[in-house]
Length: 274
Ligand SMILES: [Fe+2]
Image 1 (cartoon, rainbow, N blue to C red):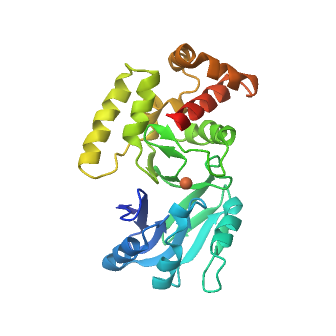
Image 2 (image 1 turned 120 degrees about the horizontal axis):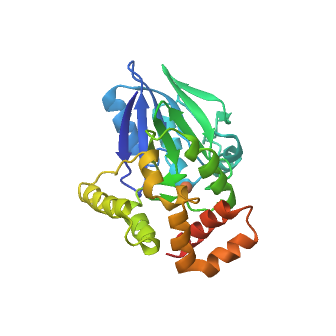
């Protein structure tokens, strides 16, 4: 699989163009349609799919223009976000979703099989796509962080996505997120664990990547070593969180189903205000 990381010129998003050896391609969340169309054309790809990980406007906003350029491409998204995308594109000339998918389904891009994972929490119907060790994860996980739950999301649901989906994938899994919040995320993590060596290292790497105008890539294995949202059961993190934000954590304990969930939701709530 060829994967190209594309930076939007009209927003702070990253999006992705993937293709098999024959040039049969899919584009994931092409907010910047001009950029997407010109890359597909210059590569000579045949665009089969436009994949929306979720319904937010900064992920679906380029759909119509991409479809005008490649009318044979089909739009696919998760079952529970499809209605929101269709209502966003309710004009008579506009196209909505052609196909909906759920966990266990496969999106075939030429020779490439993308396994559909349901990763709700940022939105109710958010999906991620997995091929071998490549995960197109939309706004579920970021370098050093987790998706926000402020626009149709639910932190409790996102916790179960982290525990039951992301934390069960192999450590070598590389993920491709929709945004680069690495520097801010690392600084937030350091506000809880100021001496954490891996986070300090990530902060430096993220600054270098920003200077070079590229997205810093990590793996789920590396994230598990420092990203607090994957470490809800780590005793050192729990101690640090209790020491600095004990009152907040207690509030979440009172209506969470266990300490892991309370820790995750407490972190998400702190990050909202940070
Ligand atoms: Fe989003």
